[in-house]
Amino acid sequence: VGPGHLEVEVDRDLVEQARRGDREAFAILVHQVSDSLYAVAHRILRDTSLAEDALQNALVLAWRRIPHLRDADRFEAWLHRILVHACYDESQRARHWTANVRALPADGPSTPDRSASFADRDELERAFRRLPVDQRAVFVLHHYVGLPLVEIAELLEIPAGTARSRLHYATRGLRTALEAQPELLANGGRLA
Amino acid sequence: MTDDRSLERAARAWLEEGPTRAPEHAVKAALLQIETTAQEWDWPVPHLHVRMRLAGTAMTGMALVGVGLIGAILLLQPGPGPGPAISPSLSPTTSASPQPSSSSSPSSSASGATAVAAPEVLTATFVSPRNGYSVLYPADWIATAGTSNWLAGSVNLWGSSALDELRGSTARFVGASQPLQSGQTADEWLANFAAGACLTPKENWIPVPIGASAGFIDANGCEAPDPPLGKGGPLFDAVVIVGNRAYSFTMDGEVSHSDFVSVLATVTLDPESAVDPSPSP
Image 1 (cartoon, rainbow over the protein chains, first blue to last red):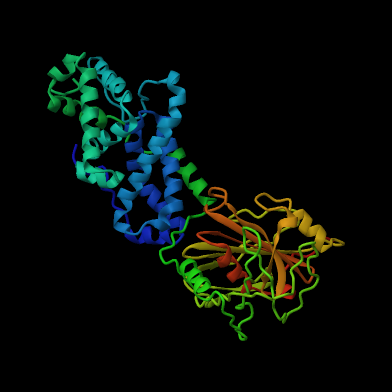
Image 2: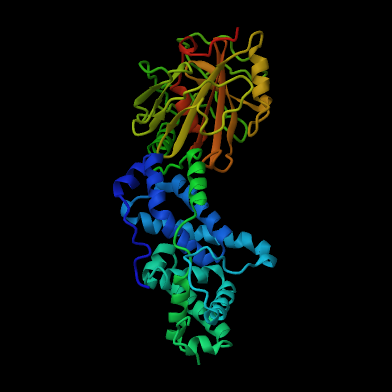
């Protein structure tokens, strides 16, 4: 995984038009970015319904606030900041439903059902869900989106040290949880 | 000790397995909601807010007469209460009947007039094609005329197509009007209007000149509801009845009482030019 999950080609003219209130231009932008946003939201929240809500809320909020956007070149980063905060909100809301923790929904690309790797993924899933959502966000932005910590800090408008510590604690949290599953790590990180 | 590199590799591989396409229904739902959602506007150049405040402060104690611009004159008189009271002292140049009758009717006394705000920023004129008024506004604001009528008994929320809307750098102004119902008096209309949310009790309304007519501020900086009903910040609302027609003007955003009063002073009411739906047969 490298940088690229955020690299959606967005037409700057569309951003400018949307800033001026052009709904059609914004709708085109939505179609250009929604896959990327949803992918990130789902990985942070680990729940299809929550990710859909976060996506929807983020897009609507982005529409409302896009006149505030100063630099069209910062559109994607700005949008992902809104998304991450929408994920925070959804995560908070989901805390009321902790009794309803579900397994990872099988709505992603179909993958071979390899029972040998299922336990590994399940363990990662449980460990990841136990992390605070702000740590999950940094972890996803770093390891899935491929952003360096400095950019994550800028995107989330937090100090670089905060981003670094969140990643550190997320990694430590996962490591602690997975030490009970040494076979995963002994596998060299491959999900068999 | 667990190898962090192995952990990261495992986590990255695991993260890659998730979905990569947004569900169509979620995108559609967002777009549908956006269709009915107004944008918030950023106000990078707070012309109105800053300049009006400066004008109001710097010119306290002075009196200017701006003869050429109807409504560019505003006399402010400090009131005895916590909020400013306004005593209109205008030389009406247009008919202003019937006046709203109230125990707190505007006084014609102008004694103690202390300030005049003649906002140079109000350089553009918006003429409502439907609601029978015009108002001055900063040229860099965006004007959107209402496209429907404010119907009797209905409440105009933000974004209503019945509202003329002027969006500025620090504030928003909306206006609408409607004819009094057959047999309805001005007092009856005002009493009905006073029942709305956010409005102060009618006995506490503040007299204010709206152009050359005498109206009332019925909401004097109340806390605006959150979007989408408003953009937050204080909300001001004023009403006036002229020529058997009721007008309502509202401002919110980074706006003060004096800002609102200044804009109201530039209003020219022309109920004859209002366009109303044809009466039902």
